[in-house]
Image 1 (cartoon, one colour):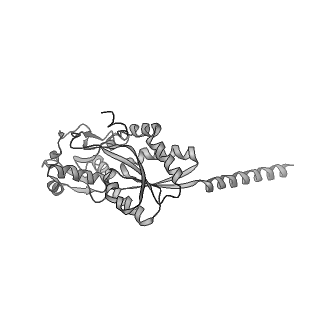
Image 2: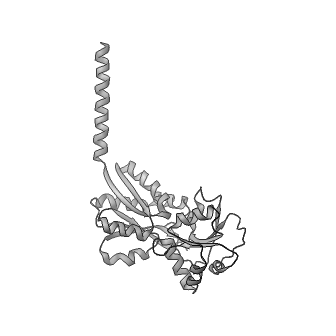
Image 3: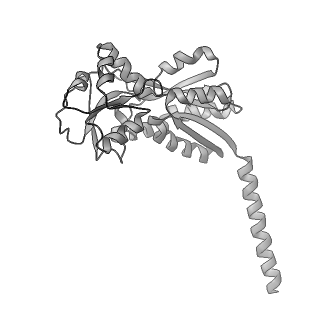
Amino acid sequence: MRRKILVGLAVGCLVATLAGRAQAQARTELLLYCGITMVRPMTDIAKNFEQRENVKITIAQGGSEDLFQSAKKTGVGDWYLPGEPSYREKHLKDGLFGEHVTVGYNQMSLMVAKGNPKQVKSDPRELLRKDLVVIIGNAESGSAGQEAKQILDGIGIYPRVIQQAAFLAPDSRSIVNAMKKGEADVSLNWRAVAFFPDNAPRVEVVDLDPKLAKPQALLLIQLKSSRHAEVGKRFMAYAAGEEGQAIFRKWGFLDNKALAAK
């Protein structure tokens, strides 16, 4: 009798295991190319959507330009979320992009140590102060560097800031990590990064005039390489909808209705 019970339990466990494997194998797998700054809200959104749709979403994170080149080279993936809309404009001719939705806005600011001990003012020209160690992003790899270049070119000081900078960081995460380590006094970075729980105790923002640091739309773009277009569209609708936008606000971003309300 005991042997029969043990055998029954073993068979039951085997069936459950096989059923679990079959379910896992049946899950649709999708790939999101996501700029560093947006990884946290998109991770939360992806987890919620996975539970709703029984799918698996992998997030490839990095600098926006590097991510596009990966998507282009591999020919696989479902969505691309760069840190600013210029990447869509720049690469539209490559024919990889389908529909898109706006999921929020990025905005550049000066980033300083908590308490602003160097008394950095709300002016990008502060990056030229001789008493400050400065870092900015690399315009060739990520959106933080590209946006910094656009702002600084707009007031004619980009070459001088580059000359003074201690180094160029590949993306927004590298910038804030350097700030937290005390490797710089000031940087230009996406402002939402300063509100992440692990960054907020160490850094803060000095906001710039919105006419100079214009909010940049975050475009979640469906890739034509996607093999699951309908699921992909539902994910985009969820990210751009009320629940997705609440998550973006939680992480310090402007939501997709912010500019319309002004």
